[in-house]
Image 1 (cartoon, rainbow, N blue to C red):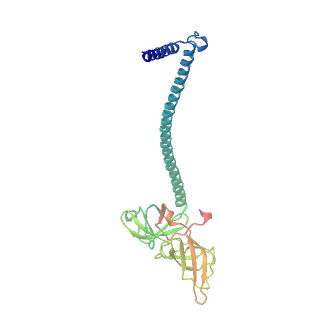
Image 2 (image 1 turned 90 degrees about the horizontal axis):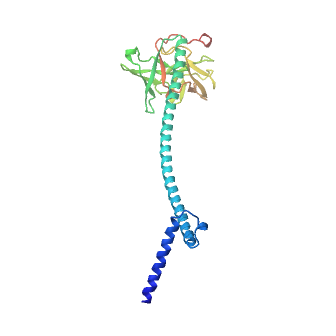
Image 3 (image 1 turned 90 degrees about the vertical axis):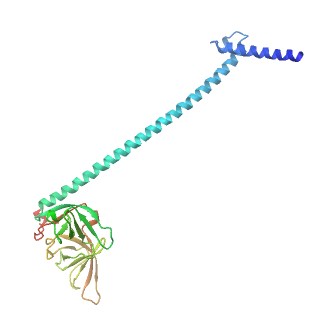
Length: 280
């Protein structure tokens, strides 16, 4: 019975503590203003309230941070998408501006030239190392014929090798099978320019006594019926004279890099002389 009485006493005390704590939790006064018999329970209730407030605040903050991070991630994705779109638009505008600049230069060259020129776009390139050519969007329906010269405003590109109805193949001056009659502009020594590598040509059939040095400009002679006289071909960068023979090897870099071309001109009346600078 004493054990049962002890348990009942503990139960009653526990119930009283819980009861007074609940009463304290539901009161709005601070522990310092609570009745003396409720002060211990008010302090206990305040501790419980503070712990709950900190816990709920932490949980609320964690959820808020989580949802903020989700929003930031969504915003970042949207910004990246908008950035990519703006870059694409800027790239397209830049490309259009560069194309307009090229076309304006070509138009000015065509207008001041005495030659009859037909503009064409480069639509293909030969990928075979031993055969260097490009394809243009002009053909027999446009009056294009084999062996017509192809140029830009800066220099010679090559000449027409094959013609279809709507397209034509241009054999580049760097192709080893190409041959262009040329002269050294300074000394007037005459030879044949043929392809050697993708960025180098040779000036063949020069006599050992012919005057040619590094830096000389090689231009068309006009004798091959494809190009007018005096149009730029390339610049000499190496001269090797045979020690015992009667010839010399002359290497030149083409004025034009044919692999970066996007637009060219076909010469329809090659027998016209190239206008001098002061005539343009």
